[in-house]
Amino acid sequence: MKKLMWLLPSLLILFCLTSCHHNEEPPVEVTLPIADIFIPATVTFDRSDTEFYEKCLEWDNKSLVVNSIEELPEDPLGSNDYFKKINFSKSTLLLYYSLHRLQYVTCKYYFLRNRIEQSYNLTIFLGIGNLLDENSTERRFTRFAVVVPKLPESANVSIGISYTSGYADWEDEK
Image 1 (tube, helix red, strand yellow):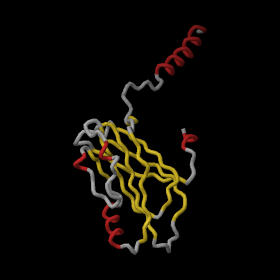
Image 2 (cartoon, one colour; image 1 turned 135 degrees about the vertical axis):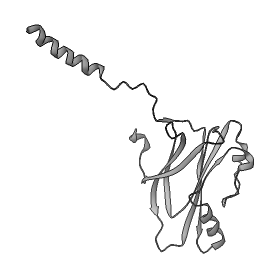
Image 3 (cartoon, one colour; image 1 turned 135 degrees about the horizontal axis):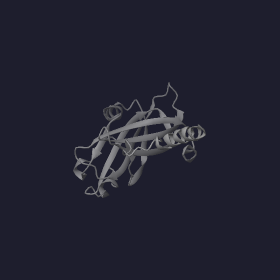
Image 4 (spheres, one colour; image 1 turned 180 degrees about the vertical axis):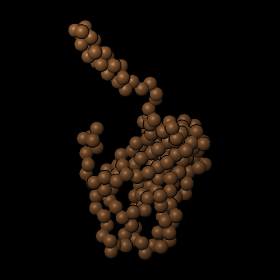
């Protein structure tokens, strides 16, 4: 009986140790490198400039995957000569546009590959400062741009923004 009393707890411990979560499957999301980050380009303008405002409205919340110099857009902010220097045979340029009344004080990017959905996801984390007065006719238009390793032409890419309070210390969040 004493041997049985000793055997039962031993088997229980052995069972617990072998049932630990040893998952041999690869992770669902994999962090991918970002080769180059461009400072967000922002222009502040008055909404009474209806021509420029209409152009910005057309580009608001628009994301682009650029795989060649010929695909570079003619957006409201104009051409960026640095974009023309990208080696598109090895890299892809991801662009996102936003029309807003916010002041961005911090910007951080995360680029992931979702293995289940077979997609690439760029998330732009923005720390926001002041919001323009609701009666103000001022608006801001921002272009976000990053260069990543070459993506397939058929890649499913989504770009989104996540907002946080203004002056968050990104390093403390790790």
